[in-house]
Length: 244
Length: 244
DNA sequence: TGACACCAAAAGATAGTATCTATGGTTAGA
DNA sequence: TCTAACCATAGATACTATCTTTTGGTGTCA
Image (cartoon, rainbow over all chains, first blue to last red; front, side, top):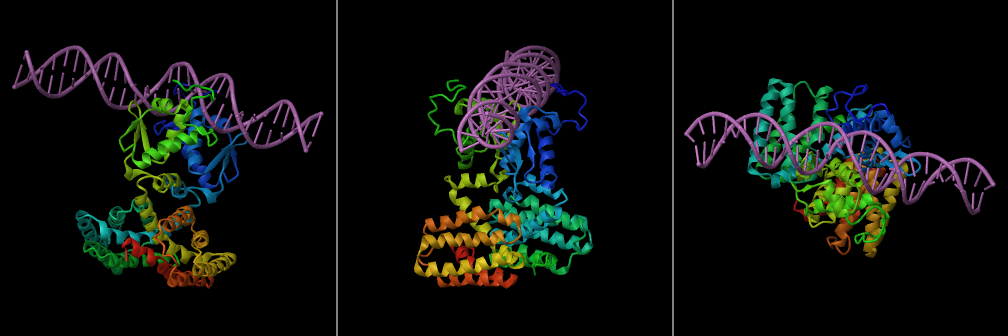
């Protein structure tokens, strides 16, 4: 082996080793699988990984064990490590979601997430109306007001930031930890929507009103009202997806 | 160290080693964390795990790396392996869901899953109406008919099996892989509901009708109709959860 | 003299390397 | 069809390197 114990030279593909050796190779292999450049059925070996990334067997093992726990690969004796068929992947693992959002298959992941958001947010709002703390209710109302201000002023960037905060707070205060775990993904969807110019230049008044309605309904503990109001927010998105 | 290298005797806590050493300790530690007997902030060491489970450092490392990738623990030099606060767990990891469903905290996990199901299934039905294959549409109609037959005959066990098949097929044919990944969890919720006697002794006619409506709507590609009909199925569940 | 702040050294844990044996599944050969 | 060789993982062991917490010592100030 050329690259030996000390953190010496010849690490052409290194950037400083700060994000930990293990993470780097996990990231590299994970991205390759998510992007499809290592399609299902592809076979790896620990030995190959050691050579390719200049790592020890232990690190190669650790990486594969993590990938295995995400169901991205399985390993069999005498065969090596085999890329699992897509159907069996743990598609809710945040790492995988991130890898896929960065890949050429980005669109599929994005629309899956959007649909998930459409499904979850109304129920989350209903949950918030029943279970949110007083502080959270107040914060939601404040954020809705802030959204109107920024929306009418046409400050899209600040609007996005507050919009994310609004929707994430909804997920946090709904009392369902599984919904809360979707926070990061929803933020990603909202960001992406703005970046790709899928947002109207100026938020429509109906959308602003709907956000205020959600906040008000949650504030007064009206679960049905909150759910309905969120539906109004999402109608725009549903239309864009052809979901009427 | 008492338990040493060879697969010798004195392994009191062994059952044959067939499910792989690594899995056994992953399971044990994972269950302990999920159940709360290793609360957030608890500290483990590789050395301690080696002694406790009679395993080598390699296996202990692998296990911890998997737990770390699920965000159940993090490890820091000089400190050891620390159980992560609940808020940060990857609560969508099927392994964790399974562990929690088997723990004393079962109820929390169960209601989270039920709420998730309430959120996702209507949108999944809409997706199926737009994207299911002809075979899937036909199968749904057939399953709905079978449900009526079994329901009216009062054959609860067979009814449950077909009910699971119906709802899983919906998730499979909706074209959203994230929804599809929830299949196992939905099956678990439905099973649990029956086992715990939360189902009426004989399915209500409204429920049977709603299943038929869903199948029919999907069959004719009516997304709105399918979504509404699923809502009717879930109304019963929503009431039971106090979600009106 | 006692209390506090600061700094340096020791120690304890993971991170990673290297190498070995055991096991089981594949494949090729009789 | 059976059998044996081989190959890759599963697991064990013993290192070194590194990071970070703890601890102990020192000096200053009240």
